[in-house]
Length: 498
Image (cartoon, rainbow, N blue to C red):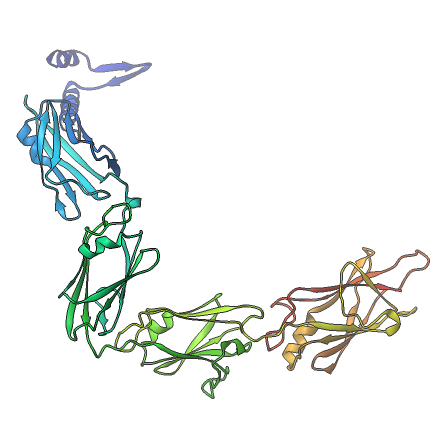
């Protein structure tokens, strides 16, 4: 080092390729000093471990160690070593094989448990100097986290008030060895109870044999003595505390009715058979207790999703009114989740569901009428077969069609929308013009006659027939009445003038 510094004093530049770097001797000394410091104190310099990477799985017979490529001061080296799990420090002893420090736990480590090797601090070298270490490595013993069972949910959740007859349900991520629960599950204070498992052994229901004691706090504990079917214990221990109060009465759904969409009359009930629900009628949900409006509205859902508004007839009765009506040929599921709460903050704790299909008729075009000599009425429609129409030899070549529907159109708005969704368009020859409606006549609420003008008759000189596409628009954006009836798809019919 001294020789190198002397050389620097006599030369104030270095050449790198074609570039010359100028540097003062004092700057060079500072650079070397800092460089030596980085060598001495760079993290983990000369230290390696097993485990060596995050989330590594350590085998049953594999050794946990810290290894040094220098001679460490053993007291200093041992003082930094720690293995922890979620409970805290894992006790054990260390031994040495040369410059490798080996860890032996006092008790066998737990299969599937997540541990952390922490080796942080400063290690002294025997020959002088120190090495900084900042090693923190999470790892698993024998198997990875994906195999470790854990408690997914508790219903009701911890901290809830429970009734004297109330059952509690716990869901696990993996199939549990039910025999292990006898040791790993405790209730404090001790109370006789029954344990009921579902067929997959993933859901446990705890029932009191008689009743939970009134005005008593209970703690339900799950220890890591509980393990899954391949002998891996729970990820962590947990406890759930509940308070039993005999005055604790859960709200429940008493009934669901269809109601008229009539706010001034306070949405009168129609039927408790939801399958009689009409297009723009609503649903009334009656609860057994006065309800918290916010949590109850949040708990309500209908699938497939339909937009609508909620109204309260009284503190126990919620009404849902759809914005645009129910859809024909669609089945719905009404759901009130377990989060709906009474006004004194007690949740239902159970999910209520009701399946229904609204009573809405499909719209059918019963027939199209025209001149009997042209083959009308027509009741089967196709864009691949044609119907001839005689529009007369002279202009303006007019023709009238009568459309007969299976359902009625009662209001001016319904009728106008229907009229706007019937079109006749020229399709051949390419330069042909389309006819246009000149009058609409409603013979009945389900029968409309439309007179069209502007057809082109058969051109005998050119031997050209003129073809037109008659379309009645289907779907909810097409022809639809106030009862929600519509065509499931467009109706198309090819016409040809004589």
